[in-house]
Image (tube, rainbow, N blue to C red; front, top):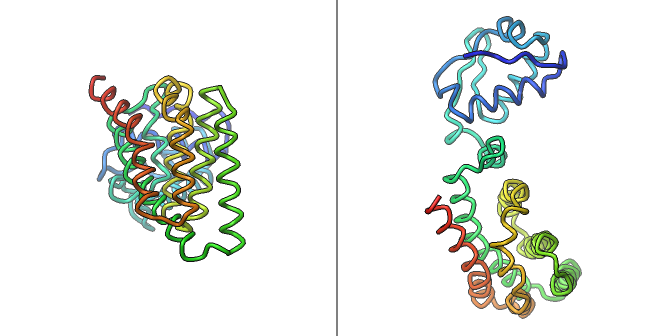
Length: 244
């Protein structure tokens, strides 16, 4: 394959980005080996320290295996990488990967009700804690901001804030990190998704019902309300992807 010279010398980030793109696209297949540091430095027009730093970042991301005295091996990112690669997988240039988009939507639909359920359970167990009452107030305020907005793109951003407050209440670092990566993958497509998402983000009663169920500390009702809120748009988008 042909390596593209990096414009800025000694910029490890540029080297990291180029190799990452090749790994995630499959141009560099799992099990294949990279050229030596010297060869990469010459091909990319950068210093060997820059290449070394980039390889260390690639190793930390679970994209390659670097062993002293041995060739650097490309790993199967599906088994070794984390959620941080999801945004890169979703958008390949200006094109959305349909399979990745489907998995993001499925995760959104399945995780949302569980997060709402956890949030309601925490409220029910500790309703008087300061952090709980503050998060509930923020949730209600965000709901009213959503009701006051008439712009579909702005509504989507406010809806993301709404879920951010629910995550505060759920108090789950695992779901928080998953949500952060899903949001990073989702946000670049907000404009394109606005026509489909307008029905969901404009359904203020559904948001109020969900906030009320969480505020009342009712896990099952919160999960049901979250599922009712998320299902219509998710089903529509999945159908559209199937037709693509």
